[in-house]
Image (cartoon, rainbow, N blue to C red):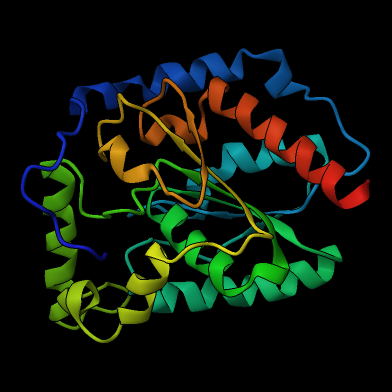
Length: 252
């Protein structure tokens, strides 16, 4: 959660475009490079952070591909990504500390949607433990610049949090003290040592693509649905290039 929705924000693409997910997954599963990717001699370790209202299992296809390439992977420990942002970041940081120690060096963070926002703040606060940050459809410039259906879901979760339901963010997370530091860090410049890449789609039916243009990141446009970014063949080609460069960076 964070900056409030501002008047005149660009429209989100049609939600119907999210029906592409099944086709994107089918195309990926038929791709030989996905099924049998080339293994590099030194693939970076990767920590994965799922999107809003999703859990670690939502990135299972991506995790399997990463392991086939030779990367060690770690989950964020999220069952349902709807918790207070500061609490969620704290949990991810605990995983990062342990995982980076096991990996013997900096790791790659890949976060989808709200997971990209959380991963960005984790990278900002722990630059020595993060080599690269990849955000998939993450509206870091304005997390509420989303379609009306998703905005309704955000408000519903906030009401549950206000009622004291465990594991749900509340209205205070949007403008109160509990997540004030998170909101500030979400927009702060990233350290020079952390490479950041924001992958976005103009046909994203969930978030406005303009909100993904983090000024601290490289911007790479793909043709993908929002949910489908974790199963989109074009996204995987981009990720392969980033991971290859990251491996060369730390072994060259």
